[in-house]
Image (cartoon, rainbow, N blue to C red):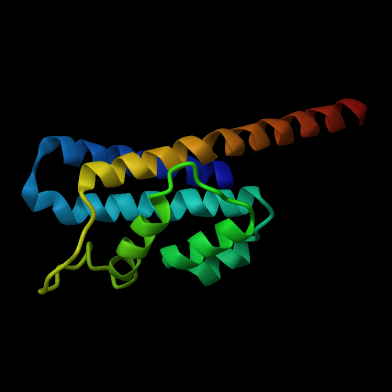
Length: 148
């Protein structure tokens, strides 16, 4: 499951970057939505990869701050020190689905290219761990089957 979350996180981030490069102002909501999904999924991948359980993820839901807290409890120490601030900024909007359902009012948002860079750094840090764990699990299954 962690590998699936990693794959989806990468896909959401890639889609956000495509919109970012298009400079399409009208697509800013979808871009931030995709970025938030990428954060949510990469943190959930980390949680699962480091001993967290599926039922924890249901309790976390779409709360980026809860996912962040749990991931740091399990040992996540991001290389990019801007991650926590980004998560604090985006959490309330992601929780109330602000990027999916347009609402009136003023938003304080991160600069989108910097946001994509920060998320990319987080994915680049966590991704190899998830891939190593998946490969080790596959190898352990092969070894077990070879002994049976």
